[in-house]
Amino acid sequence: MNLHYIKSFWGSMKTSPLIIIAITVFIDLLGFGIVIPVLPFYAEKYGATGLTVGLLMSSYSFMQLIFSPVWGRLSDQIGRRPIILMSLLGSTISYFIFGMADSLAVLFISRFFAGIFGANISTSQAYISDSTTIEQRAKGMGIIGASFGLGFVLGPLFGGYFSHFGYSVPAFLASAICGINFIFAIFRLPETLNPDLVPSGRNLSIKGIKKIFSFPLLTILIFLTFVITFAFSNLEATFALFTEKKYSFTSVENGYLFGFLGILMAIVQGGLIGILVKKFGEKKLVVAGTFLMIIGMTMIPFAPSFEALLFILVFLALGLGINNPSLSSLISQYTDPHYVGTTMGVSQAMSSLARILGPMYGGFVYDKYGIQYPYIYAGLFLIVAFALSILFLKKTSKNPQNHKHPLVDSR
Image 1 (spheres, rainbow, N blue to C red):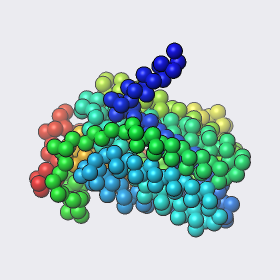
Image 2 (image 1 turned 90 degrees about the vertical axis):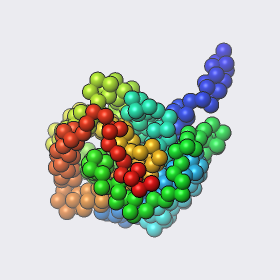
Image 3 (image 1 turned 120 degrees about the horizontal axis):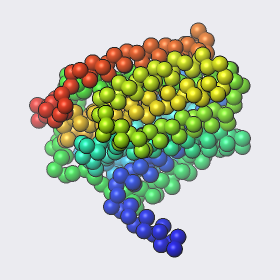
Image 4 (image 1 turned 180 degrees about the vertical axis):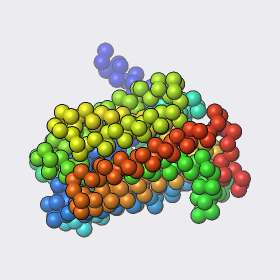
């Protein structure tokens, strides 16, 4: 009987692209999540400072900054499937190099390669956009977010646990997981790009990027994404060091904390986001989500106990869990269907730029001013994002299709 259900589920996935991309992104992010609690301690083993750890994390995002628009553009031209397959194979190799690292230089090389081949989120978002209606878009983007969340649940937990056997062991595990996912995707990941929506011979150029940013509503949304990601990147780069200083936590306890964040985000993005969007709409949710993040981020350094810290992290996780799919949905709605991958690539490039500057800034502030200041300054940046979200809410009409994407005019 159990075998029958397994066969039925396996067979049903042939016609369920949303399920398949969810599994693909989940396993990809599982590999990414495994190294998060380990990376600062692995780097410290080779003499890294807080700033160096920030630079190490930024190196991953620096390559995503460059390659997210490239993969997004190529996915508009040759399809989503080949880009995702290539990224999975590249991630397999990059994590293997990470596990073999014997110096900071090799760690940086591995993170550069991981960033190049991990720049596939824009393609995954375009995949969701291909497979959903506007009404279902936020829920579909929530699938990506939930996959992120679940990756952060199990990934850091696995990373923290297996770091007992050496810091390289979680990296080899991540490499194996990505390799298995690559094989799975070869046989089960269908193409979703409509051939009629392939832009004929149109390449992404500096002029094209300028046109994207000449569209005020898209500019606000992309800049919102940048500011929110920048603020949260302060936590990603310094949180393990913060808890090590304040609570004497190791990579194991930090793995559990990131797992706790991931569970909350998965609950919001995997189930609640569809209900919330139907009731309030994406625009109001971005305002509410940013406000929750302000509370969560600024209160972290003032938590009087570990239990209080957990309560504060709930606000941060809920805010981020609401914001990510809502912003991605809005960006895809205000984008011409011929250029979904391209525009999502530019959006992800701005997120990557935020992940470059955020960890560097957070590491610098941590070293220079103290362990609490990255979160205080991040809260100030989130206040700017909150003001922008209110501005967007006031400026937009009810129907995003009334607004013409700037690239349409150049065709």
